[in-house]
Every structure is written in C-alpha cells, then in structure tokens.
Length: 328
Image (cartoon, rainbow, N blue to C red; front, top):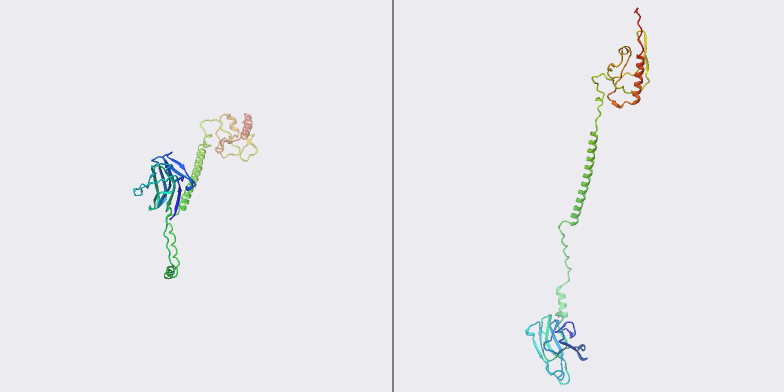
C-alpha cells in the first residue's frame, strides 16, 4: 500500500481562523516545522485522495502547558469516523511523533479531514495518506498453466480482415457547389448578352425613326402647271452639253437665223403672250421646261446659258417685217 506524506505547511492544509495558529518547529520534527493551536475552537482541514489518513504531532511538556490537550477528528462529516484525542503530558520534554488520529478503511477517492481543538495546545507535525493510487490485483500463473493453455489453443489463426468502411450514399457536396456556381455564371452571361442585343435593337429603331422623320422630296409639286400665263422655269442642262447651233430659216423671201437648242422630250411649251404678235408669228421659239425629276437641282451655269440663248433669239425676232409692194 502506497503512502504519501503531507507537511503541516502544505497548501493542502487550511487553517482557521486567521491568527488562531502559530508556527513552531524543532529539528526533530518533520521538515523542522509544526503548527500550534493555542486557543480553543481552532480548526484545520486536510484534503487528500486515498483510502486512509494518519495525523502525527507532538504533546507539549507539562511545564509548557498545564492543561492536557484535547482535539476531535472527523472524515467527510461521517459520524462513524469521529474520534477524540486526549494527550498525556510529560515533565520537562514534549512527546514527539505521537499519533493523534488514524483511519484506513475509507473508499478510494477524494476526502477531507476536519481537526478541531477543544482544550490545551495542539501541535500538528505532518499527515500520512494511504492508498492514494488504486491497487490493481496481479494475477500469477505457473509454467504448467501457460504450457497447457498453449497446447489447448492450437495453432494461431490470422485475424479476419476488417470489413471495409461503409461508403456514404449521400450526394457529393463538391458537385452540388460546382453546379450551383456554374448555373449562376450561365445566368449572368445570358443576362449580359440579352442587355446588349436589346440595346442594339433600340439604337436601330431610333435611327430608323430619324430617317423617316425627314421631309420627302416631291418633284412634281413645285413645277405643276397653273392656270395663269406666267413664265416657265428654264429647262435643265443636258448631261452631254453641246454648243448651240445656228439655224437659218427662210420665210417669204427673208432669211432668219436662230439658235438650235437640243430637242426635249417634254410636252410642248405653253405660248408666251408677253411677246408681240408679230414676232411670235415669224420667230421659231421653243421654251424648254424643267425636268420634274431634277427639280431645283439646275445649276446656275445652265440658267445663264439658257438666258443668253433666249436673248439672242429675241434679237433676231426684232427684225422688221418685209415691206409689201402695192403690186403684190
């Protein structure tokens, strides 16, 4: 049975009240120290782990204390463990290494011992704890038992292999997380593509509306014939301009020269009442009209050329008519 010693100054021992215990000691004592209780009612509590405990101390000499020491002991507040110690004093010297209390039939485990001073002086030196470590029973076997067991058991057989660890049937977490992330990325890409396609269509619609909003060209509305007899706009210039040719006309014995302008495929011109009746009878005049497809796109040079040709025609038309004789 193992034994462990606890000194009176060990932290496992608690003293009360404060100032009720004095420190003493002598070389003959354990670790040279003792704890002395001089007033009745002083208490010391010892905590330990084991199956028993023994209290060792000293009884003061008669000349040091006239009252015989009396103290009580109790383990775990169990009344069956309660004991009382009355010490016999000697004359001239103390009684050292005196056992005050001992118990050895406690169940193994943590316990606490309470020491109370009743009368006289008590000198505590140390404590012996028994059975701190549990004892495991040892089994001894003879050689004959060992050989017999070996023969009866026969040849050793290999241990069966361990069964394989069960596999989890649940869905793999990695695949689920990957699928979720991939689905989110696909949705984001589709949303971006849809946004750009819709924006492009809106731009095309805006451009189409702007083009349709422009005023259409109406070539025939500007040059429609009216009911009046006003002057007509000059004809357009031909894509293949050529120099005007002079043409001589012979009428009633008189020669007349006029400009030969290119023939137009447009309808015949309206009569010009602004000229004199005489000049319109003999002059070959042709008033070209504008091509309705060209509209106002006639250049200024074409207008100048037509104006010059008209002025020349008027000059030739201004010649005086021939004189008629009386004989005719």
